[in-house]
Length: 94
Image (tube, rainbow, N blue to C red):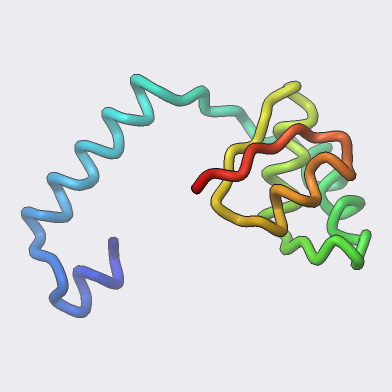
């Protein structure tokens, strides 16, 4: 959103509307899980498996999901493919 605002692709009012809708969606539809120190260590272990091609954020998402027994829903095929290899259920959207 910030880059769209800086490059005049959206107005401040449009940004406020989009953020309000997003916040409502999060509050009504998602479970927000806290990140703990152990998640960073697990993520480092996950991304150290170079053949999977995971980025740091991917590893952290998988680590948190693994700890909470959650499924990761993603548009990222690489992330969706890596999850089951690491014991984390994933679902590729689209």
